[in-house]
Each structure stands twice: as C-alpha cells, then as structure tokens.
Length: 128
Image (cartoon, rainbow, N blue to C red; front, side):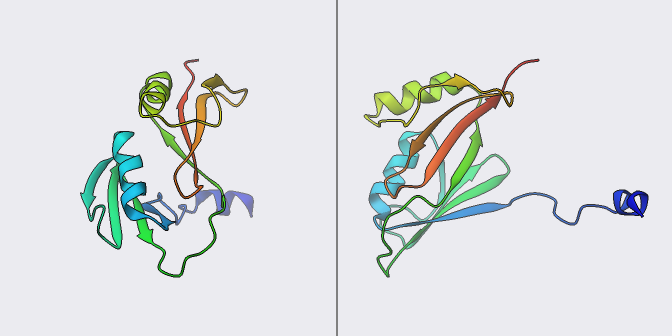
C-alpha cells in the first residue's frame, strides 16, 4: 500500500500566492517596497495590490471591515543575503523582532512584523 501511495504524484505543486489583509494599504505598500518587493499591480490607493516574489506573489487586500490587528502566523521568504535584508530593514527605520541567526534546522533568518502585524521571516539555507 505504501509503495502505491509513494508512486502517486503529489497533487499540490507549489504556492502561487499568499494574500494578507491590511487596514492601511498606503502604509503596507510603502513597507514592502522599502524592503525591495517589486510592485506588479495596485498600489497605495488600491483595494488590492500584488508584488512579485520569485515565481509567486504576495498580495495585500484592503480590509474594509476593520478586523483587529493581530499576528496570524508567519510567511517565510528566501532571500540572497539575510544580513543585507536585515540592514535594509534597519536603514528604513524598521525594528525587526530578531537579529539574523543560524537556526538548528539549517537556515539563517530574522523575523520582522509588517504594519498589520503579519510576521515575515527572511531566510536562506545554510551552506552544507
């Protein structure tokens, strides 16, 4: 039975996009642009904005209902240079949750919250 399950192709290929709610599109767009995200669609005045992230997308959707700000989880984004991204965040005046560190699971990473409280982890696999 296990062999037949392993022979089946995984029906989920990849994540195409992650969409995060924001209560202030202008503030959120500015945050992501300062960190180097490439704006594809929308912008500071739009109800929906999309950024290119590798072969996928990070989207922002304006929360017209006014949901309370709270952390919901974490998005992990791989970058070429974790320390350079950390310096970029500091230079922009942001206050990351952690400093870059090597994790026992094999990544160098740091965490930062966006203006709506979503946690972002910028990471890179450690050389082996």
